Length: 325
Length: 120
Ligand SMILES: [Zn+2]
Ligand SMILES: [Zn+2]
Image 1 (spheres, rainbow over the protein chains, first blue to last red):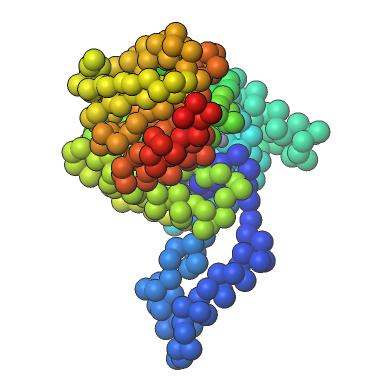
Image 2 (tube, rainbow over the protein chains, first blue to last red; image 1 turned 135 degrees about the vertical axis):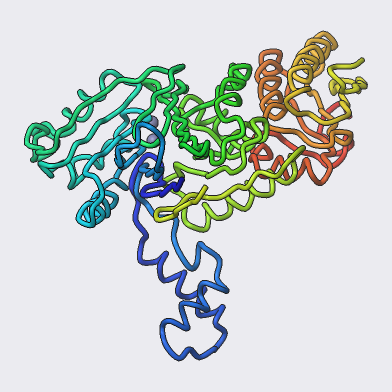
């Protein structure tokens, strides 16, 4: 199974300011310390080997969109599997069109965590939706998913109406507690605490490899007992993608009831569930690359400090990251 | 007194009550930790205390359950006009308080003597 991150930012798409790029270049020049490079390839190798991620790269600014690539199993129809339709979907759509041109099935299974704007805003820019040969099935725990997608393409919001889309688009409501064989995976859902509710998904492939997509999920301080349901859901999973937008202190003080979780709670849940790897996700839009990198390093440190059994690999999702599991 | 496998001692210093739990606060002990802390707040309120200092010197480490237990205690103590402060965290606890940003929502002191109080 492969997990490809097309959009990892929370709430709102963001872009680098020129001053941020200038600061990265300045830091790289200082690190180079007067060294000479024969060509850009040699300079790029130096950058990859020497600079930290926040200097050498960027976490990106597109909102939630994650692709699960799996093969095999009785229900494998060769379809793409996509979690959420955030602004990262635009680039996924272009990439998918290229793969279709090379022979990939023009089938898409979409799974929506919920219907907030940052999780559906990419759909009007999804090129495969204009492909008359494409079939798109949008799965959601929400029966009103179709309403949300149609509404954002009403004339007051967007020039192209939903009915003008040429693909065969259908909607299917899923229920927590069931196991659905869909494409090359078996899918399960869990209801999460969030405005208008959100759903976490578990995808298990034919080899038993398992990935969790759990974003926009607040773990309420007055309902800590309910966390055992998430520990059960995450149990021994190979990769758990978690909403880690806030610090723990923020999530239970100023930003309580804003519907998001913290790196610290995500690590505790994964430790208890004996999950193998955690991907920090739904990054705070006001955070710079340096801020996200600091949060990642602190998360790794917290994992070390609180580890009681096998280590949990804590990675930080960024736009363009592919994880093999 | 015991709470879970934590061992507690307590002392009253005029308007400051100091409680000293010992052990590690994780998923298995966090509930007992929070419940015991709630009792201590009642005792402190009965004694007319204005501050409850949680001495962390014998706490190995605390996961998010324990930290959130501190927040629940802070809310309860606020109803009684009592402020909770944290005292003498070890190096691990100090790091955890910084990573969770709990050092922004609780006052943290190196020693009991440094806790400011008109009565001390
Ligand atoms: Zn969101
Ligand atoms: Zn949301």
